[in-house]
Image 1 (cartoon, helix red, strand yellow):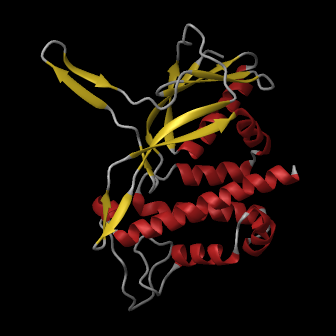
Image 2 (cartoon, one colour):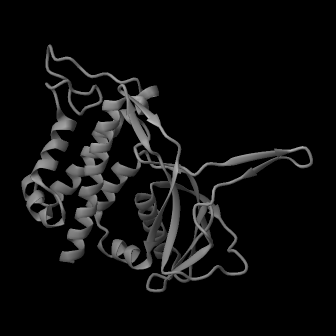
Image 3 (cartoon, rainbow, N blue to C red):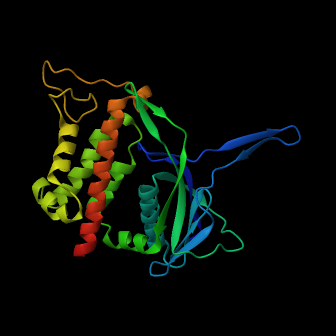
Length: 273
């Protein structure tokens, strides 16, 4: 497989982190100089059982296949999706890449940098209080386990979670991710029972379902169902959604439970496969 590059392009829609900032420094001698964010130091993680190497760089993931192109490409796509899910950094397929020379060092875990967004509720509006650096490390064994337990329900759940780019669709898409997993395990009650050892509780699941499906308790206009006749609807301007206290609370609650459900399903598959 020709080395394929995925370039970091921003963050997955989430209420906690943002993309590392690009800075521009201007001087009379050289003019403007742009400093791109460093998301990860150059490093290599190898997966010989799949014939794939992952080369992580300051703003990219490069996949190098040693053997069968089709298999290597499939594994590369799985790894890219898992990295995006865990780091909340979006990577887009760009094309052929040059492998760094000299070869980066081999590591067992790749560190990725993000910027945490400290938020404060001030009179019903969310105020950003600067940024704090946050590091998440993804180990080779963690990636291997994900590839091993990957199945169709997990593929669909991740697709619903990762592909939300518009705040108006978060409750619909996050609930679809929940539904896919629940149906794969025999329905909501059966799924709750099987995933209970991995942190899924009735109270959290009921609160999530009520939030997404509310029709009578000041429901959000972005819920899955229309409000009942005569019920006041909570309206949010999508341009200012991230400044709205209730929206951010709902966003955080929905995203947190959706991720918890996906994590629990991965843990369940790990324990039963």
